Image (cartoon, rainbow, N blue to C red; front, top):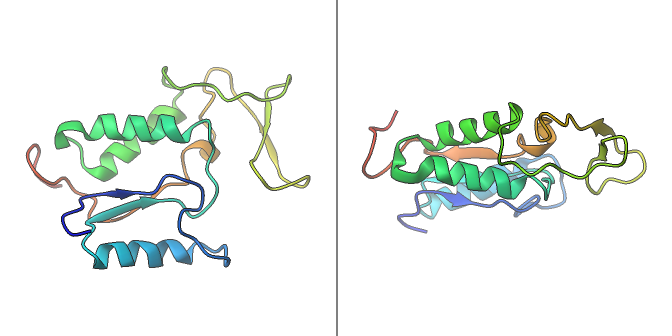
Length: 144
C-alpha cells in the first residue's frame, strides 16, 4: 500500500468484525496507514445502496485536480446531499414516501423522504469516516 494517497472502502461495514461498535474501523484504518496508505475512507455501519454511488462520484469529482482536500471534498459532497442538490437519484420509498432503514427487521425505524431533498437524511451520507491524512497531495492547492 505504499504511496496510496486514499484507500476508499465504500461497501457496507467494510472490513468489520462482529463487535458492531465501530472499533474495527480504527483497526482497519490503522493497518492501512501502517502499510503506507495516507488516508482511509470507510464506514462502520450499513450504507444505503441508493446514495453511496452518488456520494462517491461527487466526492471524486470534487477531488479532481487536488484543489480541495479530502476532508473538504467529503464535506462538500455530503452538504450537496443534505441541501438537495440536483443530480442525485431519489430513493424509492413506499406510497407515502416513507423509507425503512436497510437490513434491520421489523423494529427498525423509518423516516419520511423529503421530495425536494431526497437524500438529505444523514442515513444517506453520514456513514463515511475519513481517517489519516485529510490534506491534498501532489499538484494543486497547498495542503491545508
